[in-house]
Length: 91
Image 1 (cartoon, one colour):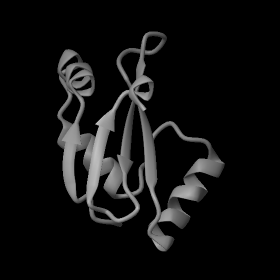
Image 2 (cartoon, helix red, strand yellow):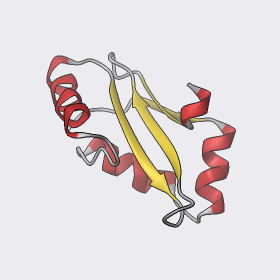
Image 3 (cartoon, rainbow, N blue to C red):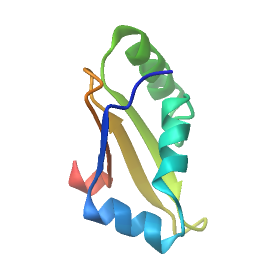
Image 4 (cartoon, one colour):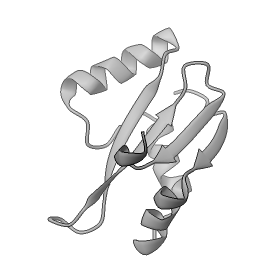
């Protein structure tokens, strides 16, 4: 649905994916094709508008077992130059 640009990740985001045996590519594909993860309906609508209007797109995915999952954010900048995987605490 939109270009990712350069993909970067914080060390903590990479550690989270590694601890749970996940590949960043699968998360990025979900983000790029409109599966925004654990966002509310209003944020989903805002993301769809952001794709159309070329503003920032933010997805949030729960990583890990239920009850102990952690959030991973994927943020694509408005100019589509870079997409960052990060933890919410790193924003």
